[in-house]
Length: 141
Ligand SMILES: [Cu+2]
Image (cartoon, rainbow, N blue to C red):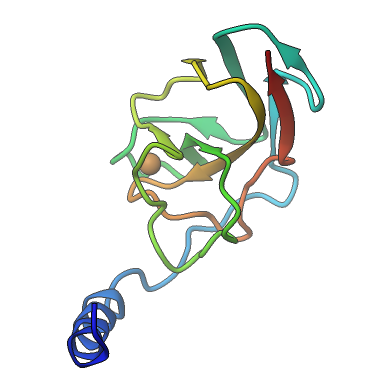
């Protein structure tokens, strides 16, 4: 894309982005998001069940704005920092579990991969403070 076309697009995008979300929903300070499985450093053969752990908050469906509750997101091989002012993207590396799932069957190509959990609110925004797990590295054989 050339610069002349890129600039109006950026202006347009920022116009759409600005009125979005007045404030991220508050999360309890003691909320803890973690991997039940796999553990950091795990070497796994083939597909696996990834199990999500959450303490001191609840799991609900996307679209449900109960206080202190959200739905899980699994980031696979994501290196960009989390932007708290944007909804969590939805693509192959940002998986949403909007039906309230607490586990998922994951198939990844052989090699090293990073996994990280992020809790999102009814509208897929991170909480304040963001509730994220440790970023773990696993190896698929
Ligand atoms: Cu979501």
